[in-house]
Length: 355
Image 1 (tube, helix red, strand yellow):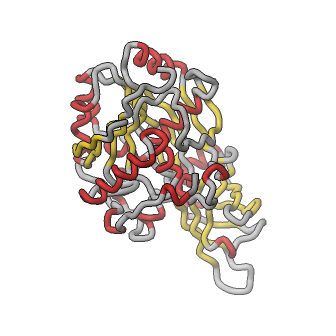
Image 2 (cartoon, rainbow, N blue to C red):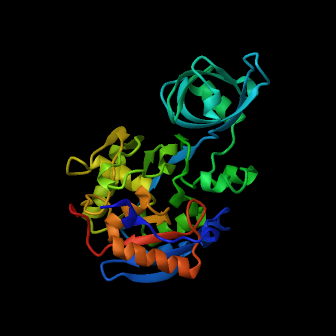
């Protein structure tokens, strides 16, 4: 398939800069396949849309304050240089890969100084990223990053406003527990304690997985032939207990519905051998139309960018024509898009292949 197959028109004014308040008041477009029936609902309607015995799977990763502002001391030819650093992937106890701006003002051997006494040496540099070795490690480094950094809001929001105190809570999901992401698993932003209590009372179960989202989630696809694209790698984990809960729910006739594409990618990675297994490894799974889902029987997710790997994923689940129709409906009705936007609930008529 060609990249242009996944393009669609999106008015810029529909890109959400703030989340709905309360969180579960966000709009929810229900898409049912294969007939393509669309229903305009709200996230708060989930207890009526799901069934007793269904199991939701959440990503419990927690977003760290990965946006750091520092400076590179003068090399003698002028003033210090202000450097914006966005952490990407942790490489060791003391090292991260990161995006730096202006990257052209950095070279291997440079030191970047941040707030709270945190410094980092540029160990290596490529065209896209720098490798930083910090002066602290493990838990001490984690604490220093939390003290010196701010929330790494997505680039399409950061280009329109700066991160502020509201983002500290707004860009963190109800499920957040395991620190390590530099971007939120945004479908989880819609959930509240009250909504989860209502879902539990309805008989909807829950299991958690962990996928630490890195900044590669925002990288554009640059090849015309989609099959040539290579996904970024992310660390993912699912426990034996979560596997058992999901398998028990599905064996009893319940549907497994991931909350977000990161939870779905974790499940499908863990089932790559044919059946769902405990998993703790890096995954670069790339899901496009033609993929046969092994675990996910549906998906709750936000509205994604044109020509993105995430729009390809939802098209794999529901069909490209149906998703283009659904997105056109969302645009017409004024749904809000991307990380702080509204959501959709995708419900294919067929159970996944091992259902």
